[in-house]
Length: 229
Ligand SMILES: Nc1ncnc2c1ncn2[C@@H]1O[C@H](COP(=O)(O)OP(=O)(O)OP(=O)(O)O)[C@@H](O)[C@H]1O
Image (tube, rainbow, N blue to C red; front, side, top):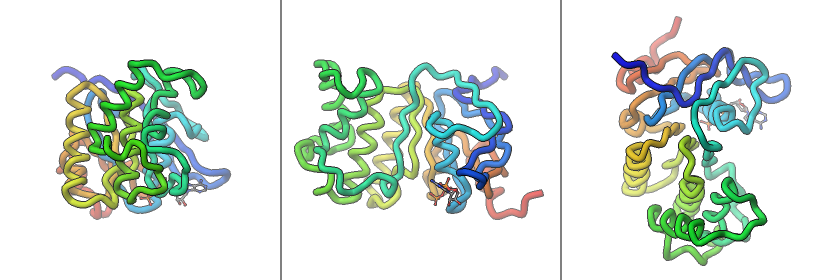
């Protein structure tokens, strides 16, 4: 069998906040061009692991080897983004293009076309002129996802992208993840939803900062709750 190409390889990665270590010697390989679901209890370290993979949180020790081409696109949990930002939905999505041209350069016609396409893809084109702080939580979540997509990165990291959305919107997000993956993007998403995790190609289970199961979602999820050695 051909070895699966890897987008990001973590070796003995420990990370935390000051003296408080949250990730404890994590070894794992994120398969390239596939979806990986990251599951684990509250506080197990999922957001911290995503931030390390995104390169915005430096590990205290260990190494991160990268085999992706673009700067990773990290979409934070909605609760991690201030609700009262006085910016429009279009401006929020356009910030996704900063990865390509920096915050001060004017958007090109191509940038604007990407922003419009991402607004349409998330079903929020009609909200483009509204301020973020006037939206419902679910609409704001879509605007953040559209911003992530607008980065056109080959590594898309999503922290609980469907949390708080209605059932139809959750399915739409999972369909979107499948579509993005079909375009060749590596997607890693943290989730508390076993259904969402089962739809992924690969699954990592974090327990108190350690990977306690990984592999095909059905098998990895079966290990959740089982006492680990
Ligand atoms: N900025 C921070 N400063 C200090 N401690 C933090 C910070 N962010 C997270 N932590 C701590 O790190 C641990 C792991 O948090 P993290 O957000 O990575 O977990 P999580 O698995 O994503 O949780 P959840 O499912 O609740 O989103 C928790 O104990 C949390 O209190």
